[in-house]
Length: 235
Image 1: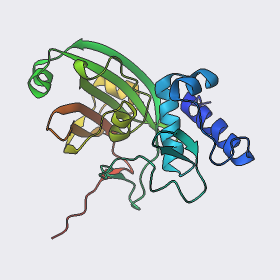
Image 2: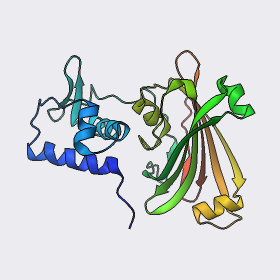
Image 3: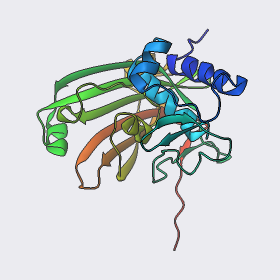
């Protein structure tokens, strides 16, 4: 049986408290540190759960008051979310795939030549993740950031890159995508439980802030069956 991610458990319990009235409308919640301690999770995990409930209009951030339980239908305008729609992955029917983090490992290391040239730094933070679609292994994901940006990086704070950056206090103003295809390596075929000759869709994303500084580079290697990448061009 697949494990339930800690952020999902936190979301479920907070949702129960809101719906039962235990957390009444207008109630001011403790800060992230206090909630993380109460729920027995990391601050990054708690931030991720809060962002999800904000996006659903159940919580709202009020200047000078922190996070409060929202009145239904009033929080959508104040909920924090990426200003630009970066989501381009979709099923054939146009719906977005729901991805889950199956495994994640974070570390620091010396930047390789390409990373050093892109980010202008000698050391980087790295999150290596396995993503699942439904109950199946779907993608191998590597996200690299300049080490100077953060003291630590929680690769489980969110599935998609813009939300992951937002969870760490970073806001992407621009994301450039490059799509390629390549055959699985032996280690990739084992990790994804696919045939050695399986073709992978490779999405390389580079996120920048308003000044043009590189915030992160993501390389997402996906099993392309039933999931594609699409954009709408308007004249």
